[in-house]
Amino acid sequence: MLPSLLSLAAASNGSDDSQLSVGATCVGSDETIHDEFTSADNRTWSFADRKYVSQFAPCYYLANHSLTNASLSQGEGRGLKLRMSHQPCNESTALCHGAAMASGHVSTLRLHSYGDYETRLRAPHNDVGDDSKCNEGIYGYFTAGYVDSECGTWNEINFGFHPDRDEGGHKVSLELHADSGGYHESTSADLGFNYRNAFHTYRIKHRPCDVSWWIDGRIQHVLKACLTKPMHTSFILRTNDKGAMPSTTMEFAYFKFKPYKATQLRPPANVSVTEHIAWHEAHPDF
Image 1 (cartoon, rainbow, N blue to C red):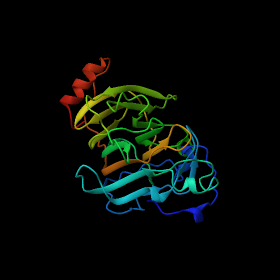
Image 2: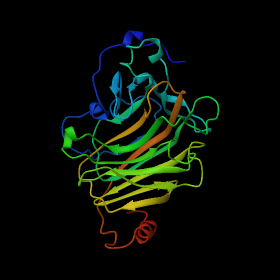
Image 3: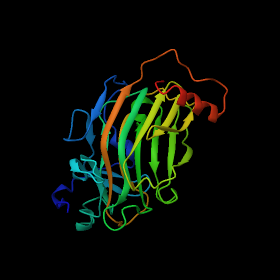
């Protein structure tokens, strides 16, 4: 049970996740990150607090819905839990600025560019009842992405967990925004299992004009797409529909970021996606 937050009804104006930007300039960090979330590392992460967003549907981000050193399911030890619940929004119509659901949202303070973004997570799932399911009005994301107020161009790469179109948890969305503009849900990977049932390891490999998505060490898709601006990494649990929904959890065992060090290796040009994937499989250290 989450504590009452009636005392935290401070105003927050924001219309979408662009209001959650942290950092002042478009400068990428070459740091390496390995965080198992045994504590709240405020030198690395921003834990959104009292932030109202409405890009898809109203949601209110509260820091006490991002829990570090939390006991994880499936014997994964301890880590980060993002929780979405009807509390404390149900205590007052004004408390969450009209949103019915409060949730957690975590982003890196610094921007990062080419490299490997990896996390071990369990996708959003019901807190009670059948935890192999998730309400269709709730979306989750593991994203390397940032807002255009910092760098002038929207770059983003993500795994999207969308219960309204994931065929029972079997398909994960692979999405990006490249320099050329526009949103691209490049494909949905059919995993052959329900990703809400257990933890899996998700990796985004970002290289100059080459982006690939990996799950449990297997490449799912690759694109020749140019994203030249550094990005914040975010863990997002948010609403896609209005109104009250069942409590939901998204869990993270760790996050790693390893900057890319340029090599002589280059993916082949003018080949099919199948051939491009085969090249990546043959060159896992690229």
